[in-house]
Picture 1: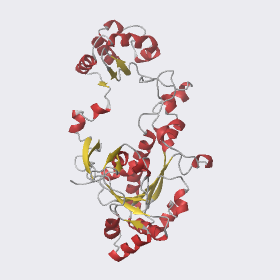
Picture 2: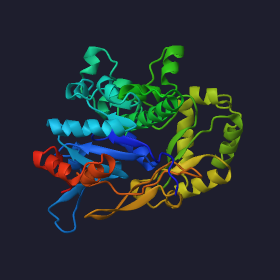
Picture 3: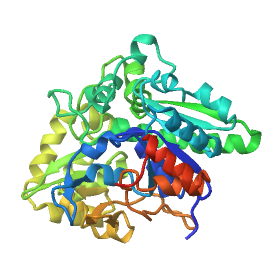
Length: 408
């Protein structure tokens, strides 16, 4: 099957999640992602959950690492040695893109910042992902940032959680994941610009920027209305009803009943047609204004029937809804399986591992999971010989110097 980014070579100097997620997106789309790891490997190789190797159960691989690093090749290069740094420079002269997610001054100190790499390869596209950005005020640039820091600093946590409750972290690391997506978009845009002009560039992605970008209408609600947005549980700030409800036997969501025709249909399904033209609820603006009295009415009705009954009735009426699936239900969802969004890979030394597939459904060049996550240094010799053209004697010398480490 054709791959959209076939022929694109990316040097992945990243670790843990934000930038590895970025390079995974590009690898799913066919780029050759060469992951350059230190002798101890990517930090996330030590993150759970773990799965034991078949031949030696005492040795365990990280499911976390496996799920984020499929479709990549791993080389193990010791950048603390002169010879190791020379190997990386050779890689960069032949690469299209470099991706890293260290603190802003780390790569400069190693000799591999953007200006330094631009001198090696003027056409290089260099993507940096960090908490507050490379072009940040000094007190921000030096601040360590993880996903929860980004969620807190961006304001996302302040609008997440139950009504009247404490701020809550979103259930997945969306600060890292959004930064990874935005990094991939930036790289693709930079590649198109380079195609037209021949010029490379530096892409500066901030996790906090990325989450502020996704706050939807929270900022304009504050700047236009003056009220500071607060957590609303599962409900929507400007559309009512638009939230989760509890049926007789379980929970589900209704979203959105935003216009008057949908409201009429919803009241019919609810068995409360008396609410259709109620003076407090006949428009979305009124329903939102009076949600404190409306939602208890709806909630009371919802508890009279099972969730499956409500879902069937709402669906038949063309009203958007969904059960609140647990993860065990997600991995068995018929449509997700049909769309290859739940896939199983044959991980070396471990066996079958199930993970999320690629969401890029394209008629000619879809994203695919075509190879498992690499073992540490699994492709060191392959990359040195095939990509860099080193002969056996040079590779052996580099290994003897501890500059590169072959597969273990």
